[in-house]
Every structure is written in structure tokens, then in C-alpha cells.
Length: 466
Image 1 (cartoon, rainbow, N blue to C red):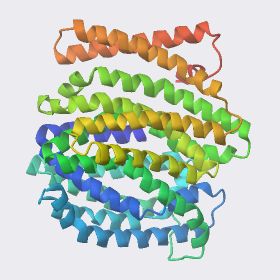
Image 2 (image 1 turned 135 degrees about the vertical axis):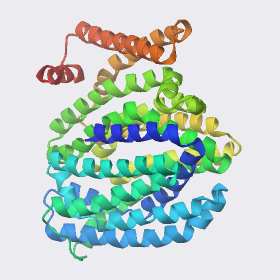
Image 3 (image 1 turned 180 degrees about the horizontal axis):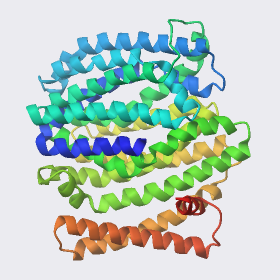
Image 4 (image 1 turned 180 degrees about the vertical axis):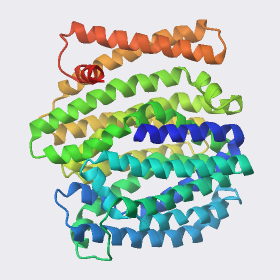
């Protein structure tokens, strides 16, 4: 589901990159930051409360839907009124109508049938897939059709609204239960969602505060390159592993009373994530120029330096993601929130306080340094709150992929200095060399260490079954 979702998103991006200019993407990126901020400031995390509850009643679903309806209504009004202020901050007058129209997405979000969360909770991912796929395809078709017809950023706005409105209709078609206005379980849901709200705000600021800083210091074209670089850089690592995290949370909840089994599931997931995220991040970093030229065109080459660093940052984020679900499963939502907020404060101190005049590239490097610190802090938290887990377990699960990625980096650095083919041919050669080197190195090390049970064994078993 997730991969098709991202493939549709990638196809949309590649087509739009040829039709629109960087400034168009910059306007939508600025608007998305404002919409996202409003969303997270009032997001009560009711879906987390429902997922964490092993046996929610219809009253829980009704209360969650009512709370979400109230919050989205408030968000719509706030965003419409705040749109002119956002346009002033970004020094982009075209933002005001874009933000005001996009505020309608909150209306559709609030009206959506809350019962579709049960698809994920009950691990009925076939239905989850159908819901996402139809909604995503509708948005894609509207966006591309209007982009060809108008060559305007308004095509992205219309596509977003089309996808959201389709989701509302589908949610009632695909689930027979109907939500009702009810607040009887408010205290119970709020006991979980209050900390989800704190965590969500911290996580949003951790992932989006930098766009506020960049948007306020640069023009729409630079903002567009920066924003699109983030999307491209995240695909091979963060987005590739997102499906696993979607399944992990309900799985963690099922086994949370058995710490040994919880450790086993977590370490297997962590091993698979590391096996995929590390080479994906390092590989994209080293072939970013060819990737940009082939996928987006030469007019987007200013995005290549951003992709190089953000790809590594996204790799770290992908590895850390499962840990946040583990913290929520163990009831440590406050700890997870603290983890996000510490990184937010560090970024604000460095980017706004210490280096107030840094450009977009400075911001990227600041983010990377903070992500490295966050990774070390993450390991400390996991070891503290999952007592059955030891540091040697984590080292055992990551050292082979790390060595494999270093070997791959050496080969790709050599290729960058010696291969002088056309961009498409060079990309194919480098991808082939990098992948072969990584796989050969990891499998050799795995064999030398005794073919122990772990991520490599799990992946090979799955491939044999396929």
C-alpha cells in the first residue's frame, strides 16, 4: 500500500517537475507548512488512543470522531484567518488564497468515518490499501489533468481537495458502522491523546521548523528545490520502511505483556530497517546528481546538494521510527514527546540563536548534526525502557549493514571519479555496482559470523517464498 502510494506520489512529482517551475513547488511547500502547523497544534491523536486500546467500544469511536470533528472545525477557521499573516511572513502574496482553499482539507478530514481506523487495528490491510489507493489515484488524476491544462500550482491544490473529498465518501462506503456525536469517553481518550498532542507538536516542529526558517530566508524557487529535495531524499529510506512501521504498532500492542517476545519482534524489525535504510541513504547520497537529472531535469540541479545530506538524515530517521512506536506501546508517550522536543530546542538554539543568518545549506547540516545526536539519545532511551534489550543486541543488528554501506561508498566514490558516461547510463552502472557490493559484503560477513538468525535470514526466507 505504502509503496504504491509513494510510486503514485513520485510519478506525480516527476510529471509536475517537467510542467511547473521551482517557484510553484515553493508556494505549495510554504502553504503545506502552515496547514501542517495548524493540524498538529490541535491534533488530539485520537487514532493513537483507539489503536492502543485493545478492545474499544462504539462509544470510544464516537467520542474520537466527535473530538476530531471539533478540532478540525476550529482549525479551518484559524487557518482562513491566519492566511494573510503567513503570506506576509514568507513575503509571498500568492499564498493567501492557496492557504484559505487548502483549509477545506480539515473539513473533509473531520467528516471522514472514524471506523476505518479499525482496518489498521485489526490488520485488515487489504481494505486499508483499497481506501488509500482509490483516494490517491483520484487526487493524482485531478492534479495531472489540471496541471497540463493550466500549468499552475493550483492543480496541486485541486488534487489535494479531490483526494480528501473522495476519502470521505469511501470511508462510509467501505465501513458499515456510522459515528455519532458523543463525548462519553472523552477523559479516557484524552488521557492518552494529551501526550500524543505534545509529541505530535514536537515531532512536527522537529520535521518542519527548518522549512519555516528556510522559507523566511530564501525565495520561492529555493524553497521549491529544498522541499522537493526532501521528498526525493526520503523515498529510498523513510518511505521504503513506512509500511513496516504501520504494521509494527498493532503488533507491538499485541505482545507488549511479554517483554521477551516484544524484544524479539522489535530487534527483527530494527534489523530489517537497518538492512534497508543504511544502504538506501548512503547510495542516494552518492548518486544524487544523476538522480536529479534523470527524474526531475537539469533545472532542478540546485536541489542535488540538499539531497546528498537529507538522504543520510532520512536514513537515521527511518531507523529511529520503530523506537517511537515501541515507546508508545510501553506507555512512555511522555518520553517519546521529550525526545522530539529536545531536538526541536537544539535546532531552534542553533539555527535561530547561534546562526541566525545561515542559508538553506547551513540549515541542512544543522539538521544532520542534531539527527546524529538524536540517534544516540534514542539508543539510550530504548535500552532504559526495554530492560531485556542490551547494547550488544543493537550492535549485532547494525554492524554488518554499516560495513556493507562503507564498502559500497568506497566503490561509488571510485565510480564518481572514473565513470564518464551519460547521466542515465552512469546511474544504472553506479546503482548496479553499489547494490552488488553491498549485498556481497553483507552476505559474506553474515556467513563468516555463522549464518545466525536475524534480519538477513528473515529477508532470505521471504524471498525464497516469493
